[in-house]
Image 1: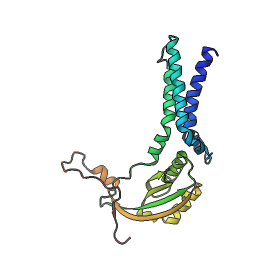
Image 2 (image 1 turned 180 degrees about the vertical axis):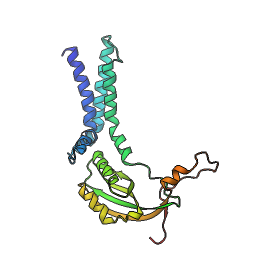
Image 3 (image 1 turned 90 degrees about the vertical axis):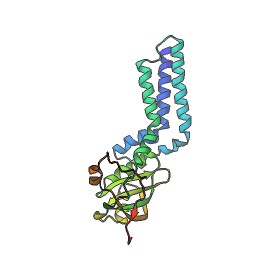
Image 4 (image 1 turned 30 degrees about the vertical axis):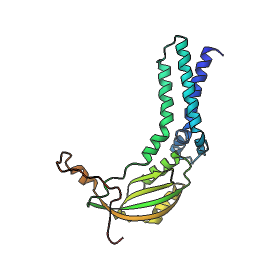
Length: 220
């Protein structure tokens, strides 16, 4: 095998393995953009550590032989390959972080919101969970939501004045192609966004830990 052929093989193996290790996110996110349903890449999830190990090993061997041949280790080619490989490798963690924003401010007595707890079926990978997360955000009245792929569940915070019902939310998720079952609904009071923006960041009052559960409205 020629040196050029070895380099191409090493780069291809490093990047390709990283792509396969995160295919449930990288490829499926592209399919989501074109409104294509889950392609079943989740079957590769158990092999993710092996793919990432192969990716790192291939890239490391390329650097080693570059050094042995007196070639620059920190070349543009190697730097680009490294950035691409790392970006693909950490993509599932990034998508999971995006799917689970912190639901803060559920303790201040300013506005009333409905908080739905929902079990979601049909999510086969983190990209599917991302599709659910983005789809829920598009529902009228939804302020924010969390979608946990591991537990196949989510929490949806809705403006209580919109009157969104269990059936409305389940129907919206069904339209997105996922099954849904509301397991709990409660009303809580929380700080409104306008109240948050008007509060002074230099206040001398001591801060207190914020509860993510909030205070339930009496009578529900």
